Image (cartoon, rainbow, N blue to C red):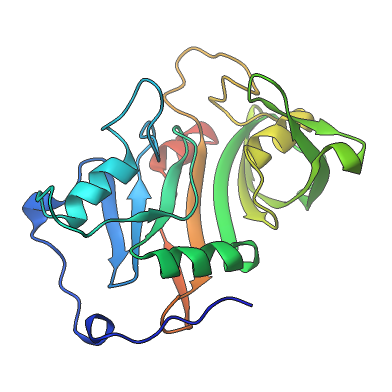
Amino acid sequence: MSQTLKPTMQNKKPFKQPPRKFHPKGLLIVYEDWDILVVDKSCGLLTVSSDRVREQTAYYLLNDYVRKGNSKSRNRVFIVHRLDRDTSGILVFAKSEEAKRFLQEEWQGFQKKYYAVVHGTLPEKEGLITSYLAENSVHKMYSVADPRKGKLAKTVYRVLKASPSHSLLEINLLTGRKNQIRVQLADKGCPVVGDKKYGEREKGIKRLCLHSASLTLIHPFSKEPKTFETKIPGYFGSLVK
C-alpha cells in the first residue's frame, strides 16, 4: 500500500511559480504545485542525461528552474518516469522523495493516452496488442513468445484517421514497458513514422510521430485524480490528409 504524505505548512501555502525568466526552454509548464511538476516535453529533448549530453535534459533544466538559478538551493525534482528523446508530450516530476515513491508505486494504475502516426493501415480499426518484451545486449527491445523471457505488454489502439500511406492512432497504455508502443506497432507491420530504431529511415520526415497526449494520476498529497492534457502536434495531422 502506498505511503500517505504527511501534511506540512508548505503544502498549505498557496503555490507561486518562479518568475518567467527562470522557465526552461523546450519545456512548457503544464501544472505545478508543492508536490509535482508536469511539463510538455518537446521532441528531441532527453529526459535525463546520457554519456554525451549532460545539461540539455528535462531533468537538468527543471532542477535549475525550481532552484531559480541558485545552485545552493535545496529545491530539486525527482524522476518519476521517462519519455524517449524523440517522443514529445506529458512528463511528470516529483518535488520530494515521498511524492516520487507514491507516484511510482501507483504508476501502473494511471491512465496514459498517446497519439501516433504509423505507416500503412491496421487490419482492424481498434484492438488490443499483447506481447512479451525483452531487451538485447544493445538495449533494443523485441517481442518473445515465452512469457518467462519477457515482460507482459498491453496496448489498446484506435484508428482516428487514415490515408493510403499513413494512419493516425489514439493509444492507451495498459502497461508501461520500454519502447512498448514502437515495438508492438512495428511487429504489426505498421511502424511509427520517423522511428529509426524499429522502423525505416525516411527522407523528409521531421520527427518521430509519437506524442504523450494525456495522463490521469492520483495526486500524491490530496489523493484526488488529476488529468493533464496537451494538443496533438499539427504535424501529425498533415501526414494523414
